[in-house]
Image (tube, rainbow over all chains, first blue to last red; front, side, top):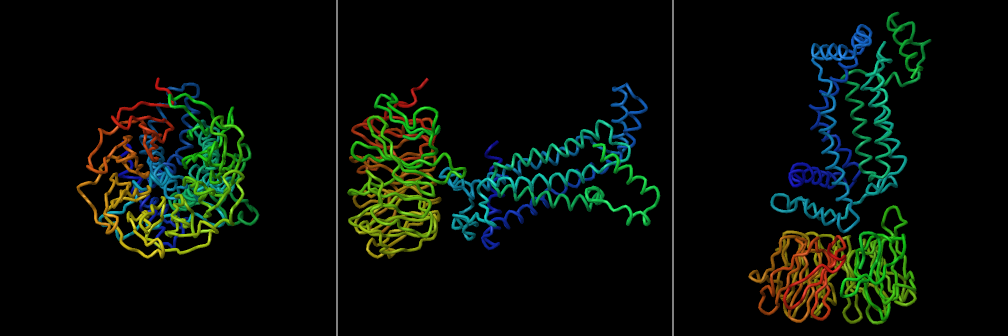
Length: 276
Length: 323
């Protein structure tokens, strides 16, 4: 299993990272950014389905709420009806988890690639020697000659734990992305699903930020860039409502141009946020 | 020997732990270099456990019999991977902080101001007469004066030099991560020949035995070269099933080779045949074997030590005591 992982994921990711480093002026941070974009493009089909699912789930919240009201007290019936709704709207409630799970092996491969390429212990370099492409058609690339890689970027050593600042940026960008994936929906704020979604949108960024504190800063850079790309993709797929809802509102300027219904929705949404 | 738990320990030939440093709950970090004996003291390097980056290091000196009377001879800003060299009355220490330090082995006082190289130094210095030779991660090989640390020459090679060069017969032999081995003129640094037959990095120190050079490679082979020309005696190549990271150790007419495949190989340098079937340890063997009398000692990366009878190849786990 480990050898399959190394062959299919670790070695390609590691060597592409080294190749990018060699062609991008030996700038390790830039190599990580470009690699992140490439990995995002590769995982785009899975990510797109996740984005669409999150949009559909948000749109379905009012109907789910209605079901809860209608069958209040009968949990089994609520579950049945909600599943029926999901089927009718072509939603797999667990469908959003799969893309996340698919990303885990990529994160692990990237983590190991960073550890090994910026490795500052003999064991790190010994591992690198096993995974770096050097023979046959790869000989011309001369990847082993890149060693040791320069890991400095804006005064940060990308091979060492990034600390609070990197961790905070990871948490912040992830929180924004999560907020965009679960935009505030009218009438749904009190449902268990909405409550769960809201707590997850806070829990995940905090957890990732804490997780990142002790990881190499290079991996933090990957998370930040990946989140920023996710925010942009989410915006283009499901709209920017989630992002704009995080910005301070100026109703006196916007009100005259808004239809009455939209104005009412915005006000309710604002109240819901206050409740939370 | 260093242990993964951050303790430096002494064990007797029966495998009983005699002392540990530091005692109690304290620990001092990772060990990458082998210890050195200086009179009744043992000198070793360890990473500074209080440094979050794990890069700073210290050179300690303790009484060999008890592990007491500890003294820090030197603190460096980079790891110490290469084993310090005691040559004459001076201890030469290399560090990933790019410096070569020449120290009084008793007081730690610097004999001359630290020599600054162009890159991290992971190997040790090797001495020949009044010259010291070493390589850097910045693809350079240096010769400096052992007396005052003045640079004599510097040459560039293709890749980073991770290990320690070998010297003999007026030549310096050094391997790099481009999987090449270079023979350089010890007086000028001029390249005499290069060997490009290895399939992976050359990290361990080559062993010069008469007219032959034994070159370990991470591709699992020990290549046997004609030291004068660099021509390989392919028929004598020693093949193992794992990376050979450390340099072979010569004792008598036998060369002992530690391999990542967890095996210790013994090769007769006259017949070029295995002296006995490889001794199978438990754990990757990444450091050079040590020979004392008729016993070969080898320590695995997991801190387990083994003793092997040099005559027969039979061995046992020395430390910790097998359960």
